[in-house]
Length: 303
Image (cartoon, rainbow, N blue to C red; front, side, top):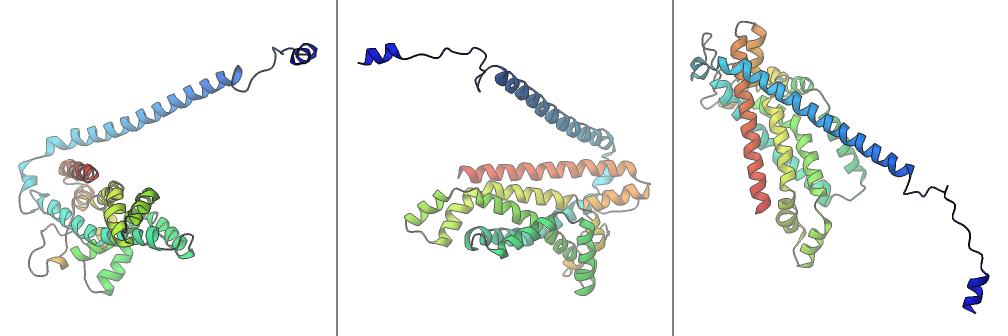
């Protein structure tokens, strides 16, 4: 019976003009699109690398010949325009800002991801607020710091006023990067920890945070770069005194960071060469901070 049915059935001839979805012109078009996109990506990467190399090369060429011994004197004078006080103030300002902003940002992100109800209106408001604050110009933070810390609280132009202002400025950045890092941790890690009898707090600090540490440190690195390169906000809150804070009221002494020091030297027009030398030191400082942070992130990841 099967042979009869097979013999009596009519077989439709294949149409050679029919183009299958995965063949013919579709494959050629896909190859062309892939090649175009591949070359566009390569050109974009090459342009980015070229701009970075040109920028760093320009700074080194203009600044390295001006790295004289007078720039590294311990005390600043109008003759040597030493950058050492500004360098120390930059380290102090960065440390103070991160000590204030990092715990607040990390704990706020932990609450948003781990404890706040998902889909809550409050969570959406907080996220929109942090994203908005990230786009506000730094001079607005400087004006706020001048009105609140310098004038309102009476802290005057000081290291503390500048540090608190910068902490508020980088807090949204640390908070958002930490939140994204925590959300990237798979839920299976949390479920496995709960299955072994661990509580919520121990799961967060023993499982989730170590897994998200590289992402958290990336946010801290970005915040550090913004603090080190900030000028406008510090002119209104920290001042421009080229001296290292000392004594019991060191936190309330006016200071000058490397970025402010470089801005003042270049704006005066009398020490432009020294400003280029300061730019070299600032560049090396940022590279060292990034290298140390990357090494720390790798060590924590292996651990």
